[in-house]
Image 1 (cartoon, helix red, strand yellow):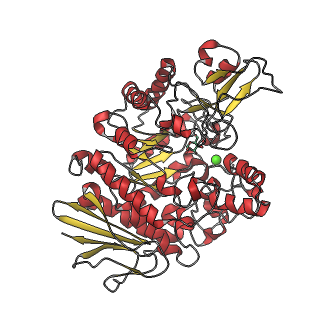
Image 2: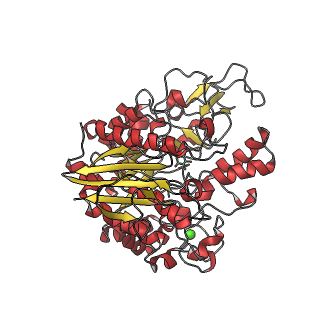
Image 3: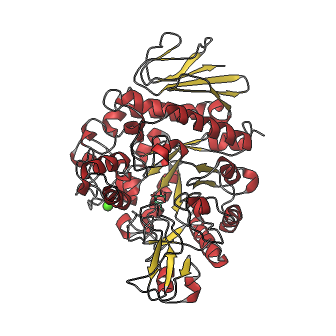
Length: 555
Ligand code: GLC
Ligand code: CA
């Protein structure tokens, strides 16, 4: 079954989301950290770009060990980011401009500072049941706790279990040791989480992102993983669909715009999460296409991106989700990824072309595009030269782990520099003044030196800028029903080329993207008019120029 032609596709397919990493977006009070009022002050910029919905990363009370993904209270505002009044003002001002807010719900784990975890630590049996606690071996001590319950690895490095001497138990943390995994098998936990959704609904919030939500259902039997880090046991776990359906129903969010972040997931699972018949989520993020430069799946080693593999993955997911009635979130970039133009493009020789090529490739696909702050300007990875410029817990852990694995400090630094989440978290470049207009104080994380050229003010004034190109792509999606709801089919092409066609009611769009700095053979097209291209002049027929991304249309 294809949903190419129904109203849901028009609805989701006509929207564009914009991701705000709040710490790095806009600082209103000079403390060097972005905040809610900073977002409110920049709303007109987002109106100019044309986006519909703002996903704002967590701004709830948190010790900030993982920059807000370690939540200690889900129904309040972290003072560093502002107050509930600031949130309400932002929400009103956004709504007045036709922009919705999407809140980031971190429900796989809480901060260990959350009152639930604190009560668990104090021995309250009700709250011990809120988390994944497992008894230690008899005779365990703080100095010598024995073996953890399984050999599973934390996503941020090291074992995923932490021993608590006063309870003589271990708790699971798939992320940092200060992010304790919740026990979703406990109905009380599920009902607490649904209550949090109802709280934000009552504040008028109409869209939600769910952080690593396919990790919430852990297996009943905990066993060692001798083939991997444990993820095959808990990703898309046994009760995942049941728990999501309950959360959506009890949280009162069925039919709202929702997206789930799916870690190491499958096409089949994502169809399940996003097919409307299941009443789970509107769409899913998956990350397979962002691993085509991980040798053997290893994030912390380097290789050139494999474009043939990239095309295969896009084809599988785009065509497969259409067939199964699912819906994709379309993206290259977020706060967990280094900037995609530095990674898949050539920011030295073809900065503009390759930044725009990436946008053409995903913005015309079937799904809902997400733009990550600064991506629309072509912001690049950081130009950091020493490890002490980094802040991210994962990056700092791996800098150490890579050296333990035998890399020299220089090699470890090069890998971290190419892979670090901080490389995509450098502050938004607003203009060419000090600190790019992001803050009047000392920014919490350094800026890229190229902000004097790559910034919003300069690019808004230039009709040939990356910003203006993104703006055109956003407008195009709103104008062309074939982009919103057309079928999708990938076309055979040269190894460095990704090409696909969209079709709806006799209108056909063909997209061709050259992922290389040399000319590539293009398709032999029969006429058609250029719908959008990152080159002004049409190419000679059958040729794609370096980093060219062009779409033709037949009406
Ligand atoms: C998601 C977030 C990431 C965070 C992790 C744990 O992957 O995007 O930033 O560290 O979940 O919450
Ligand atoms: Ca601030």
